[in-house]
Image (cartoon, rainbow, N blue to C red; front, side):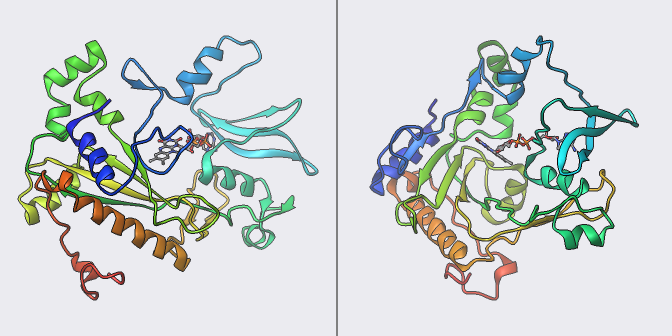
Length: 312
Ligand SMILES: Cc1cc2nc3c(=O)[nH]c(=O)nc-3n(C[C@H](O)[C@H](O)[C@H](O)COP(=O)(O)OP(=O)(O)OC[C@H]3O[C@@H](n4cnc5c(N)ncnc54)[C@H](O)[C@@H]3O)c2cc1C
């Protein structure tokens, strides 16, 4: 699905010498229309795609509103899971194995609560150690920097347009329109000059045809922005910095401590700067200049540095 803004993005890419590509095709470097798994204008979630069709199986039991609090261990083997539902503790035992899929933050937390983690850290919380392993020591979070610009044309998807009665009706009846476009009008660029090693791409940009209400409120003061605009999300793909997940207590309902360590590795900073410079070149193309885009204003928090230098 295309919009005037996504077309601008593709045109700007061409001006910079990038091909328009199929980002799930053989070539990854270039500009493409983002691809999503959707049905009737709704993004297909894991639940709808995989779980719902399997709900009738007799060997599948799903317990909702349940929080796993511990993996039950027998020696060094996982034999079940302890969980809390409606304030009551339950235990289920397995015939074969336990698969943890609590996400990249909660999975290490559950492992550590179960005694699988760095010995020193578990000892500090008096958790009996089952296996001394570097759980939580390899967090790799893709840092995202949103570079937002206001424009002087009415071609983005503002909150007012997306939530207007006609948009809602169009979405409900046909599964199309501004509400749907808000979902699909993302595109990617895989940077050229930001390739460092291993033949992989280090930067991805996701282009969104709207600006957030918060940005709009802040930027209105500086830019006299009408609410029309876009955001280019510059994403670091292969960061070398490593963060940590640790427990703050033995209470399974306490969130863990996240130490992201963003940009700790100097290569990450350098790659990020190249990504931002590519964004600036894109904004300088005639395709984008036609939109009357606003410039980024210097941030007062960074006033120690000269604006638009690498140090800034
Ligand atoms: C903003 C954002 C945008 C993204 N966009 C994309 C994209 O466009 N394409 C793409 O491919 N990927 C995308 N990703 C990445 C993708 O979402 C993740 O890689 C994926 O969801 C990981 O799946 P998972 O099952 O491991 O964990 P999750 O999806 O995090 O699922 C973990 C689940 O476990 C539950 N849980 C956690 N702890 C417990 C517990 N103790 N007891 C019971 N339940 C528990 C959580 O509530 C959650 O429902 C995006 C991620 C983010 C944050």
